[in-house]
View (cartoon, rainbow, N blue to C red):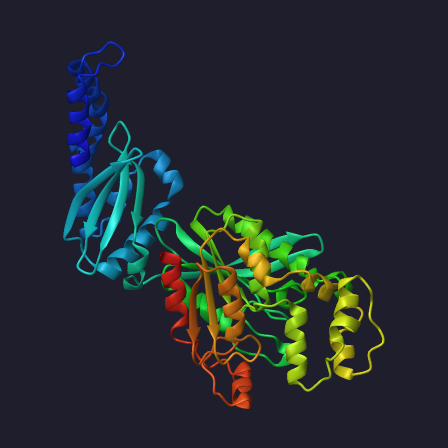
Length: 445
């Protein structure tokens, strides 16, 4: 109000004229310009009556009567069985409406507040010239999603690549309106969409649990089998021709494909372990809204391997010079005598290692211009809180959450190393209880 008064006072004091118009005429034109907006801000009588009928039909569970109010165009967008299913879910979760209140008008859409005992829902609606419902959408605040008995559905998503097809599972609640989508980019090794790797006896179901828990909050979740794993086995050609950029391209492909799905309001990347680095680079090449590093490294892989090999009491004194520098410069290293080193640096794997070394997480994460969240467990045997510190230094605005008891497979684990490792083969252990709530909070901030 003060700004409006000052605005008028300024004209009054200076006795200004605009384009030859007196202040009186200018005020009249200003009023006429705003008049259509003021009219639309009022609740039209015909719409009030239509919404009143909707309220009555909903409370009487007469969903066919609601559908009879739809225009032909609206019916093409929404079939009766689909509309009925959603209405029944809302009614079954919330019961009858106690009130309907006109709220606002924006972009040709009228907004109403539907009041229930547990919560409020927004109704966005408009009518055709013959008073049929032409646009109709119920919108539930994401923070209230847990109050609804959501119908969760899984569907297969396939990405076509040159070497074949990569398969994944989209787990999503069936809701009115657009919802966020989290795309999980998996860790290193032969990890499938559930977070398991049979070849190394890893059976955690961690990714499957994430999908199930995130979807109950009203957020869709997508995960996939990497090349050569599970249903995507046929898409793998050979180790020598696979690099980190191959996995980056796969992630970009899924992000772009799912980004065209009109069910989703935004895409959030959640990269686990090696997938955190893949996600950093993929985020630079796509339109994503937020990025989450889950147990992501803060150092390049050559530095990480030196530490890990030292922990296994393998002599790494000259590794930078004799192995990593050679691989980085395009040479194939063959003069290795230690059995573990011969396996890790086998010639067929060195092209992948070469591409991996070229990416420094602290450099890549700096390139992101979107909100960043860093999640880390203190009982991770692979990645430590020092990694989070390095990433935080690179992106000072990043949000950080450290979980005291969580290990690399996202479960609470014993401080005893052998017991910690045992959790990798026990799918009965639940996820750390604070993980999903904090991800949910970050997405909705």
